[in-house]
Image (cartoon, helix red, strand yellow):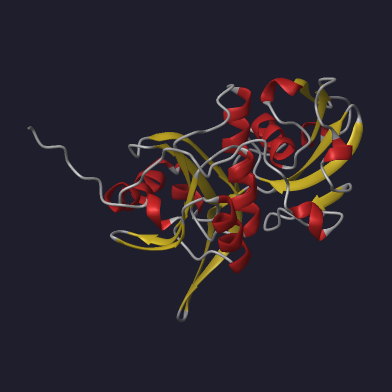
Length: 278
């Protein structure tokens, strides 16, 4: 298994000038996830936080509902050179399992989180949590500060400039957990997997921030973890907005400094009134 980054030789060209050098690239490798020894998925990811990635993936796909329904995770160690790119998971007897998840065995790329769904009906995975009545209220001031806080925590991005991040924030805008990955859906899975393994689900009164666009699969993943709000620095898709609206989730796009678009749940994005003494 490679590290998070690798060094690659290159030729730099600037006008008529050419020079040899090296650049730091973000690593991308496959991770095969197995359940009780049977391969169920392969995802292209940045190595690191693999147990969180697997836990988040299984939870957001409906294979498990809680972190304690995963009784064991381990790498498939052996003599093969790719031994740390295979991870096997053992589920508790009360876990929903593959039959309830609605997807077949599949391979995902670093840009796709839903490639293996067996049918379009199975895409709308039912979450065990409802966010419609979550007490979370967010002010534009708090939201505007989130991208800079996420960016400050992105150490690997500083070195490579080539990967996504997901940041989990509390209602006051404090960063609770941040994960980076070459795939935006993987970054979400790592954050959600961390929360599941820490016994923090559902993530009531939290907001998750995507460093790129907000697709349908990211909204679904947030809902599966009970996260009541999602923000992104880029655009949402039409289906993402539709799902967020149906669930009662605030969905914010193009979050850049003081500007933002609220596509769903605008009643919970409001300027907070200061209490005055009687």
